[in-house]
Length: 67
Image 1 (cartoon, rainbow, N blue to C red):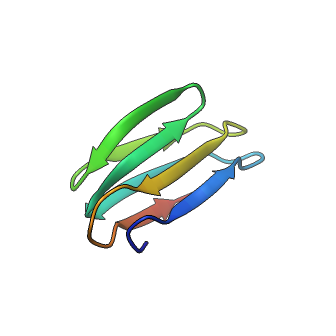
Image 2 (spheres, rainbow, N blue to C red; image 1 turned 135 degrees about the vertical axis):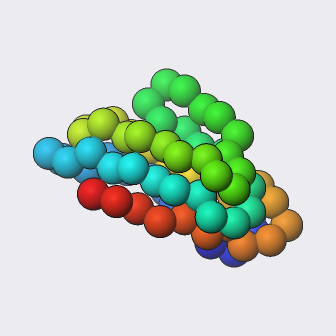
């Protein structure tokens, strides 16, 4: 993800998601919570929970999703 971009707010019906951060930094919003993310961060998103990721850094944010 380029700097100042985001994965918009969305949810997945019937499946959970695990998100791994490999490069960069940003902010993650999962349900009613938010947290800073960086290399090594792992996020768990339960089914039907709205979430989004924002790249707040100056370099690309590399993420990988696992259904």
